Length: 139
Image (cartoon, rainbow, N blue to C red; front, side):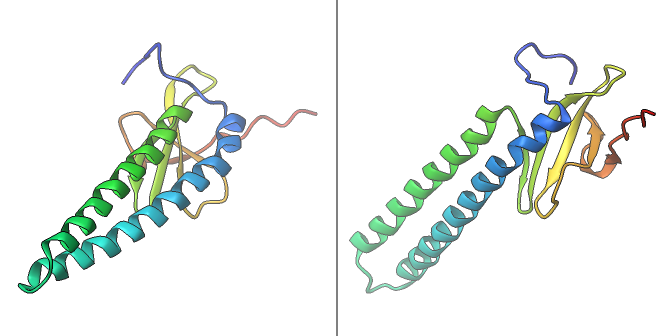
């Protein structure tokens, strides 16, 4: 990927500080997706029933479109934080970071993890995760 002037780099502490907000956005996304799925299910039933009202189907379709817009808006909030969305189910986020040697990597966090403890190169992805280097012990 390389250097990008608009890319925001996070320290480990800054990334950790964003986790509560990231978790909140993902909780909202899960709620929106569940509500949208309910409307999709109702819409499919209405479309399969030849006696259903076209107006009812239009209402359900409108709800699905509205919730899709809500989801897009919530995900834009993640982008505004400077994080990189890698997945929704499970939630997967990358934080652009520079190691002490200057190498650009992503700090990665997956839903269910309490902390940010791993990173991967910008080209490896989640499969190439490595534990964060431990700071040297000072005596």
